[in-house]
Amino acid sequence: MEAKINWGIVGPGNIATKFVQNLKLLDEAKIVGVASRSLEKAERFSKEHNIEEAFGSYKALFSFEAVDIVYIATPHRFHKELSIEAMNAGKHVLCEKPLGVNRGEVEELVSAARKNNVFLMEGLWSRFNPSIKAAKKMIDDGEIGDVNYLHADFSFYALDRDEQSRLLNPNLASGSLLDVGIYPIFLAYLLLGKPKDIHAVSIFHSNGTELQTSMIFEYSKAQASLFSGFTCNSEIRAGIFGSEGELFIHPRWHQAHEFSRIKNGETEVFQYPLMGNGLFYEIEEVHRCLREKRLESSLWTHQNSLDLADLLDAVRGKSGIVFPFEL
Image (tube, rainbow, N blue to C red):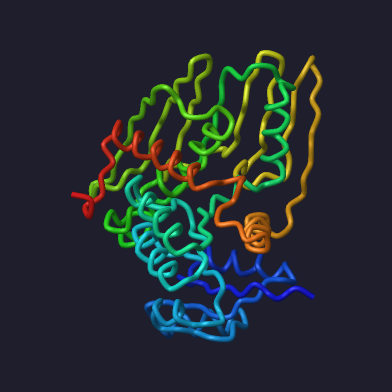
């Protein structure tokens, strides 16, 4: 029997809860510790999920010898700092998206991973979704012809949230773009590559938080229309339109369990039921990489994360999204 892969959890919030639920679906995974700035929160999370150790500081978890890899699930602003601290302690890292708030932070993270010879991956779980992988293969194989147009949106109502929450507090790198806009941008990048030009406009909260952003990515022979927001609930559906057919990734497309193809007047549905809530597949990929002693995933590489950061920075530059700690 192969040895267990021991996980430490950094930031015991809602996404960490979902992640732990998926970790428990893999026999080879073991959760050995959880850390928070609040020992009380860490202890509550450890008791709820039957985790052996709870730590009232991140440094204590990073120093815990039993931990092989840490999952960083804090607000965006702290991703770089904590990931680098973990890697400097010799731990592998899976960090929630976005890997860094900007391109410069992602460069620092990649540099730290290489310096410490440890695995690092951005937790862009949709890349490993079976429906999205199958849809990409179908498009790459030319089954809908040349792609000329892509549409993807992701919006939910969040104006009722506390202004000190990670969604609305600019000091935590708030706003819809980094939180959910990253998904439509990822899909356009995955299927069409980097655009030759980007157009973007945003609407802002009185405290400076970006609340919704509309984007158009221009390619030599295609366009992508993308949207993210906290001002309304959108359909969260993706459509890819080609010269010989259309492909629709059904809501909520970033965690899809099926997609449909329309070609020659006929519709065919392709179903890929999810294990867990979808985070399962990125964990599988991390485990594969660790077993094979890889320092990055071939499906979502360090360069992919750098490219995605470039696109996010470009959108921010066009629409005027700046965080106070960057000034």
